[in-house]
Length: 188
Image (cartoon, rainbow, N blue to C red; front, side, top):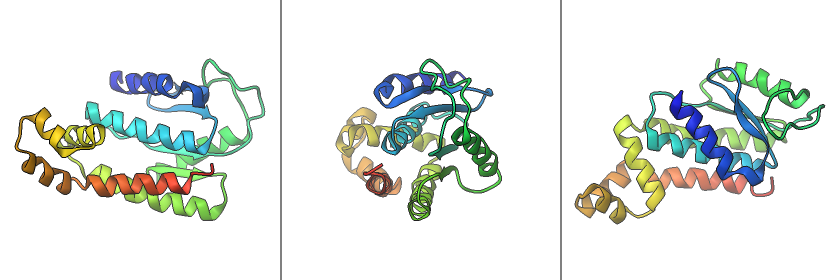
Protein backbone atom coordinates (compact mmCIF):
# COMPACT_ATOMS: atom_id res chain seq x y z
CA UNK A 1 0.00 0.00 0.00
CA UNK A 2 2.91 2.32 0.72
CA UNK A 3 4.25 1.89 -2.84
CA UNK A 4 0.76 2.31 -4.32
CA UNK A 5 0.20 5.58 -2.43
CA UNK A 6 3.66 6.87 -3.42
CA UNK A 7 3.11 6.14 -7.12
CA UNK A 8 -0.34 7.81 -7.04
CA UNK A 9 1.15 10.90 -5.33
CA UNK A 10 4.11 11.08 -7.73
CA UNK A 11 1.81 10.67 -10.73
CA UNK A 12 -0.44 13.51 -9.54
CA UNK A 13 2.58 15.78 -9.12
CA UNK A 14 4.17 14.94 -12.47
CA UNK A 15 0.92 15.29 -14.44
CA UNK A 16 -0.78 18.06 -12.47
CA UNK A 17 -1.21 20.20 -15.61
CA UNK A 18 -3.06 17.36 -17.40
CA UNK A 19 -5.23 16.25 -14.48
CA UNK A 20 -8.64 17.84 -13.84
CA UNK A 21 -9.43 15.77 -10.74
CA UNK A 22 -6.41 14.10 -9.12
CA UNK A 23 -5.91 10.38 -8.93
CA UNK A 24 -7.48 9.42 -5.62
CA UNK A 25 -7.36 6.05 -3.91
CA UNK A 26 -11.01 5.14 -3.37
CA UNK A 27 -11.50 1.58 -2.11
CA UNK A 28 -8.14 0.60 -0.71
CA UNK A 29 -6.71 -0.89 -3.87
CA UNK A 30 -8.53 1.22 -6.48
CA UNK A 31 -8.04 4.76 -7.68
CA UNK A 32 -9.86 7.12 -9.98
CA UNK A 33 -9.27 10.50 -11.53
CA UNK A 34 -10.29 12.73 -14.41
CA UNK A 35 -7.76 13.85 -17.00
CA UNK A 36 -7.88 16.42 -19.78
CA UNK A 37 -7.25 14.11 -22.72
CA UNK A 38 -6.75 10.59 -23.97
CA UNK A 39 -3.11 11.45 -24.62
CA UNK A 40 -2.69 12.42 -20.95
CA UNK A 41 -4.38 9.21 -19.80
CA UNK A 42 -1.98 7.12 -21.89
CA UNK A 43 1.04 9.02 -20.57
CA UNK A 44 -0.20 8.46 -17.02
CA UNK A 45 -0.61 4.70 -17.57
CA UNK A 46 2.93 4.45 -18.96
CA UNK A 47 4.37 6.52 -16.11
CA UNK A 48 2.43 4.56 -13.48
CA UNK A 49 3.59 1.23 -14.90
CA UNK A 50 7.21 2.37 -15.14
CA UNK A 51 7.21 3.65 -11.57
CA UNK A 52 5.95 0.28 -10.41
CA UNK A 53 8.92 -1.31 -12.21
CA UNK A 54 11.32 0.73 -10.11
CA UNK A 55 9.70 -0.48 -6.87
CA UNK A 56 9.15 -4.03 -8.16
CA UNK A 57 6.07 -4.59 -6.00
CA UNK A 58 4.31 -7.92 -5.75
CA UNK A 59 1.17 -6.54 -7.41
CA UNK A 60 0.07 -5.25 -10.78
CA UNK A 61 -2.44 -2.59 -11.70
CA UNK A 62 -5.36 -2.75 -14.10
CA UNK A 63 -6.51 0.45 -15.77
CA UNK A 64 -9.88 1.54 -17.15
CA UNK A 65 -10.10 4.47 -19.54
CA UNK A 66 -13.57 5.74 -20.29
CA UNK A 67 -14.63 8.83 -22.15
CA UNK A 68 -18.01 9.92 -20.86
CA UNK A 69 -20.09 12.67 -19.30
CA UNK A 70 -19.73 13.80 -15.71
CA UNK A 71 -22.99 15.31 -14.50
CA UNK A 72 -21.64 17.15 -11.46
CA UNK A 73 -18.93 19.79 -11.17
CA UNK A 74 -15.43 18.31 -11.39
CA UNK A 75 -13.80 18.16 -7.97
CA UNK A 76 -10.30 19.56 -8.48
CA UNK A 77 -9.13 18.51 -5.00
CA UNK A 78 -9.99 14.80 -5.03
CA UNK A 79 -11.84 12.36 -7.26
CA UNK A 80 -14.76 11.86 -4.88
CA UNK A 81 -18.29 13.17 -4.95
CA UNK A 82 -18.68 13.32 -8.71
CA UNK A 83 -21.48 11.56 -10.56
CA UNK A 84 -22.31 10.86 -14.15
CA UNK A 85 -22.56 8.29 -16.90
CA UNK A 86 -18.80 8.43 -17.56
CA UNK A 87 -17.86 7.49 -14.00
CA UNK A 88 -20.62 4.87 -13.73
CA UNK A 89 -19.44 3.22 -16.94
CA UNK A 90 -15.83 3.24 -15.73
CA UNK A 91 -16.85 1.47 -12.51
CA UNK A 92 -18.83 -1.10 -14.57
CA UNK A 93 -15.79 -1.67 -16.82
CA UNK A 94 -13.59 -2.21 -13.78
CA UNK A 95 -15.91 -5.00 -12.66
CA UNK A 96 -15.81 -6.54 -16.13
CA UNK A 97 -12.04 -6.29 -16.52
CA UNK A 98 -11.58 -8.44 -13.42
CA UNK A 99 -13.38 -11.25 -15.29
CA UNK A 100 -11.20 -11.09 -18.44
CA UNK A 101 -7.54 -11.49 -19.32
CA UNK A 102 -7.32 -7.82 -20.35
CA UNK A 103 -5.57 -5.53 -17.90
CA UNK A 104 -6.42 -2.25 -19.61
CA UNK A 105 -9.97 -1.51 -20.70
CA UNK A 106 -10.97 1.35 -22.96
CA UNK A 107 -14.47 2.60 -23.76
CA UNK A 108 -16.33 5.68 -24.94
CA UNK A 109 -14.29 6.16 -28.12
CA UNK A 110 -15.05 4.97 -31.64
CA UNK A 111 -15.07 1.18 -31.77
CA UNK A 112 -12.23 0.90 -34.30
CA UNK A 113 -9.87 2.90 -32.08
CA UNK A 114 -10.98 0.95 -28.99
CA UNK A 115 -10.20 -2.36 -30.73
CA UNK A 116 -6.81 -1.11 -31.95
CA UNK A 117 -5.88 0.14 -28.48
CA UNK A 118 -6.98 -3.11 -26.81
CA UNK A 119 -4.69 -5.10 -29.12
CA UNK A 120 -1.77 -2.68 -28.72
CA UNK A 121 -2.14 -2.67 -24.93
CA UNK A 122 -2.29 -6.47 -24.91
CA UNK A 123 1.06 -6.53 -26.69
CA UNK A 124 2.50 -3.87 -24.35
CA UNK A 125 1.35 -5.70 -21.22
CA UNK A 126 2.45 -9.14 -22.48
CA UNK A 127 6.04 -7.89 -22.54
CA UNK A 128 5.66 -6.00 -19.24
CA UNK A 129 4.18 -9.05 -17.50
CA UNK A 130 6.91 -11.37 -18.82
CA UNK A 131 9.51 -9.63 -16.63
CA UNK A 132 10.41 -11.33 -13.36
CA UNK A 133 10.82 -9.29 -10.18
CA UNK A 134 14.56 -9.10 -10.83
CA UNK A 135 13.98 -8.11 -14.48
CA UNK A 136 11.70 -5.22 -13.53
CA UNK A 137 14.42 -3.13 -11.91
CA UNK A 138 16.74 -3.71 -14.87
CA UNK A 139 13.94 -2.90 -17.34
CA UNK A 140 13.26 0.31 -15.42
CA UNK A 141 16.88 1.36 -15.92
CA UNK A 142 16.78 0.55 -19.63
CA UNK A 143 13.67 2.72 -19.95
CA UNK A 144 15.21 5.47 -17.85
CA UNK A 145 18.66 5.64 -19.48
CA UNK A 146 17.72 4.46 -23.00
CA UNK A 147 21.28 3.16 -23.44
CA UNK A 148 22.55 -0.28 -22.47
CA UNK A 149 26.04 1.17 -21.78
CA UNK A 150 24.64 3.39 -19.03
CA UNK A 151 22.78 0.44 -17.54
CA UNK A 152 26.01 -1.58 -17.68
CA UNK A 153 27.80 1.21 -15.82
CA UNK A 154 25.03 1.32 -13.18
CA UNK A 155 25.33 -2.45 -12.62
CA UNK A 156 29.12 -2.47 -13.09
CA UNK A 157 28.79 -5.09 -15.81
CA UNK A 158 30.29 -5.57 -19.21
CA UNK A 159 28.33 -3.56 -21.83
CA UNK A 160 27.92 -6.62 -24.06
CA UNK A 161 26.23 -8.45 -21.17
CA UNK A 162 23.72 -5.63 -20.75
CA UNK A 163 23.22 -5.39 -24.52
CA UNK A 164 22.16 -9.06 -24.49
CA UNK A 165 19.97 -8.41 -21.44
CA UNK A 166 18.25 -5.53 -23.25
CA UNK A 167 17.50 -7.92 -26.13
CA UNK A 168 16.23 -10.72 -23.88
CA UNK A 169 13.93 -8.31 -22.02
CA UNK A 170 12.55 -7.09 -25.39
CA UNK A 171 13.01 -3.44 -24.45
CA UNK A 172 12.93 -2.36 -28.11
CA UNK A 173 9.66 -4.22 -28.67
CA UNK A 174 8.22 -2.79 -25.44
CA UNK A 175 9.06 0.74 -26.59
CA UNK A 176 7.59 -0.03 -30.02
CA UNK A 177 4.30 -1.08 -28.37
CA UNK A 178 4.28 2.16 -26.37
CA UNK A 179 4.98 4.19 -29.51
CA UNK A 180 2.20 2.40 -31.38
CA UNK A 181 -0.26 3.29 -28.59
CA UNK A 182 0.92 6.91 -28.65
CA UNK A 183 0.49 7.05 -32.43
CA UNK A 184 -3.03 5.65 -32.16
CA UNK A 185 -3.92 8.33 -29.59
CA UNK A 186 -1.98 11.25 -31.09
CA UNK A 187 -5.20 13.14 -31.91
CA UNK A 188 -6.93 12.39 -28.60
